[in-house]
Length: 166
Image (cartoon, rainbow, N blue to C red; front, side):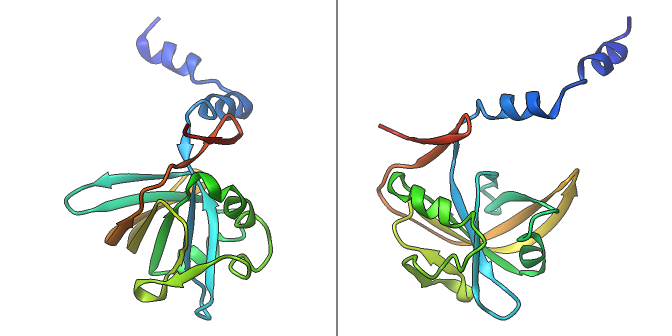
C-alpha cells in the first residue's frame, strides 16, 4: 500500500475525536475586543490565539464564520487581544453571553478607541493585516501596534474547563 493510500485511510476522524484530542492542548484565554460599526465596544472570548512573527510583529486568532460576532469582527479594521489572568474566569464567561458585555466590566480606551479590559496579563493592540477563510473559520492576522503586559498568572483552558497556574 502506498504512503498516500495509508494517509487517506488514517485521516478519517469524527468531530468528537478531533475536539477531544484538541482539548488536551492547554491554551490561554483571551477576550478579543473591537468597536462595532456604531463605535460601541464589542468583545468575545477566544482561545484560538497565537503569535506568528517577531519581525514584523504579527498575531493571529480565529472565529467561526457562523458566529454572531463574525460580522462585527470581519468589518473591523482594528482589534485588541486581552489576555486574561487567573482571577478573570468571570470575564471569560461574560464575553460568551448575548448581553452588553462591557456594562459591568472595568475597562479603558486604548489606541484607535479599542476597549481594553482591566486586570489582564497583557493588552495587544492590532490593526487587521489580513483575513483568511479556512474551513468553517476565518483567521484574522493582526499587526501589533502596541503591547503592554502586567505581572500576573494566566487563566488556562484545558479539557473543556478552566485551570490556573499554581
